[in-house]
Image (cartoon, rainbow, N blue to C red):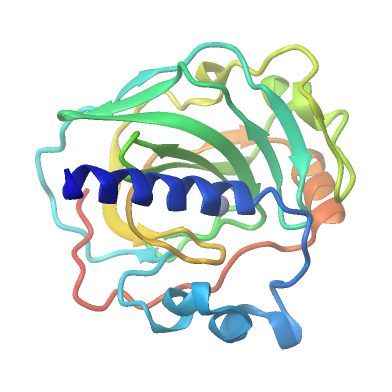
Length: 245
Ligand SMILES: [Zn+2]
């Protein structure tokens, strides 16, 4: 009984931290006095940001080969609302889209973007990275990360990109976004244990970074950076973790 209450509490906290990211607050930023090296001092809730041992993003290198469990993605065209919280552009989802790996089933909560990429693969930075944030009902978090390289205009991205909300704006998504059109041909992934990359930098997040990038045009990525600025947290220390590929 105690255990169950604790799980519900963790779930509520996690949900709060996810919802908090929709707050159009500029209490933290990517540079200056409220920049990443000061995030922990901005709030007691942010202690993990500068004092945690399992933080994201990482340079994904010195990886260990392993037989990986396949990712089973069950996504449908949808998306409930789109918002600009001043830190990123985010699409929130209603329930019904899941990432399944082994016996874990994670529900897609939201997806958002970073320019340039936060994680690096073998020291390579990409011009943009999409994070699809998932949670179990118990509050266990998983992020599926997809890199973008410069190439053809991405038609699916254009469905939300042609009408990006301004900072502080939130509105219902016009039409729907088909995530399956934003997936690369291969779902081979790199796996590590990390954190949210924005305050409160919550740890215990399972990261799945797809090895294969998808394409968007330079113009699409520039439009995002012009609106949001560079929103990539600096690389964090690996410490005692292993990265599996
Ligand atoms: Zn992110």
